[in-house]
Image (tube, rainbow, N blue to C red; front, side, top):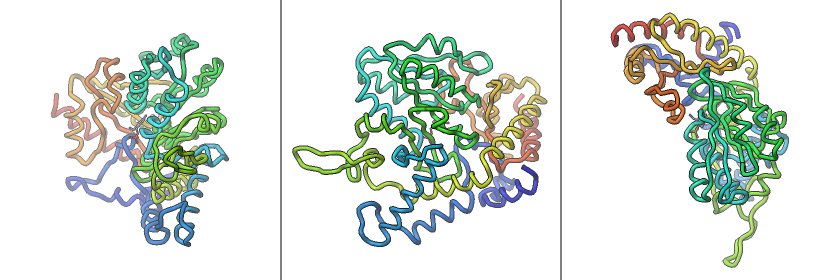
Length: 407
Ligand code: PMP
């Protein structure tokens, strides 16, 4: 994307005009959450001004308008992920809730004592803990795919972990710490050869690379809206219809029922069976707006531009003496994690903040990964379509100053 396009994109994100300690904000914490363009902010206000009424059950005009907007949003998200079956898209609060849903409901239907679940060493806590809870509940075992020094999964060991006791494989598409883009298509093919379903955590993938659930033939795919320019509190689970029909509801309440009697309740059809309670229809419509925003720019254009930024940042960061980049996979997304000498990541992050630069420090909710590398954490700069090479230049000069102060 050229300079003019980037300037236009930047002008659409009001928060980029903020001054932090009197300095222009440089926001490199996009892996944690992204900023929101004006169209998404407007859509939230529009929702409350023009279509706010509880959905699905209402006969009145506003309720029907809100229902239509929510169901259209489902279609937009489905199209974006590559499914034309709207019942395969379940709105959730985000990635975490979506994984908990699958871990609980799939666990109830298909898991028993002695069974196994396979995850990888580079998972976010939200793709570890729900499976551990399932393992505890059902007396099962969690198996872990290790990685090599570059931060790539060991596919041979992965194959050797699968057996007749494996019930599901759940791995991240892109690591939030290392930036590694995992070979998910291959991971899915290998599991499917043994009739094992696969969940892919797309939290760090959907904002950055094209995803097609049908092409991947993935069984469950999850992501969070707030990492792709939408508000917090909304995300989605894609699930193959056959699985969603085969597993029980996650939560009980309104919306998810067909009939309720004290003797017996029957459940609603898909996707409503998994959406108990009043859904976040303002959030879903704002998510659809964010998806349209991304589609207009083109996810391929975003991917190419962010790749350019990542390559540039990776090159420039190596000007810093004693820098160690954590995660050097051949296939990488818009993340550069690093350490400098013995300096604690937290100290670097604190001082960069005083210069208006937002990076994340610590274990990034991936403690087992950080422990496996034997480091205290990392400093993580993660990029988005509104970042620029000029910002990276300012960041590198600031980092040089910070390192000098801390050495
Ligand atoms: N998985 C990955 C790979 C992530 O990066 C994150 C967020 N950092 C999550 C899951 C959890 O997402 P959320 O907190 O939005 O549910």
